Image 1 (tube, one colour):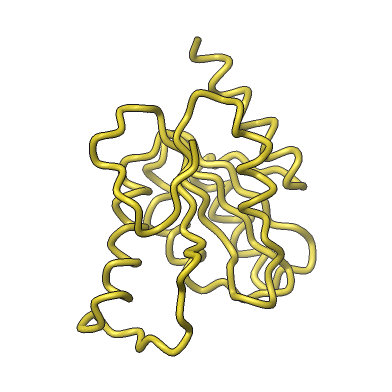
Image 2: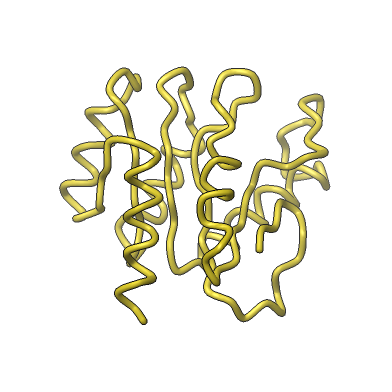
Length: 155
């Protein structure tokens, strides 16, 4: 099952995967759909922050109801997910994804990071992942397989 921001997932008891990573409309590929489709047959709830009704004119201030709702949804989703998949598209800067790596990387039990060559801060991402023993992969396909393996090993 796939839920997108800001859909409510409070009462859903399924295991959760959060898709953290590059969005930057028009710059990043829609990797979330690719991953969601590949994991759709798993018995998990996929939490996708790529919001269908996102309006880039919304002011990014906490007083803006829609913006605050989005940020809080993403934070809660990451706090409650068993797995966080994180993708850094080399065509983006992804400052929020970098922030989320710092927030959740050191404490996330199951985070899988894909940061391809060419991402402007790949060195920083590589060092953080190494320091905090965060699994890294080279491709989105490897990220999908590593995620499936986590759930297979838990059964």
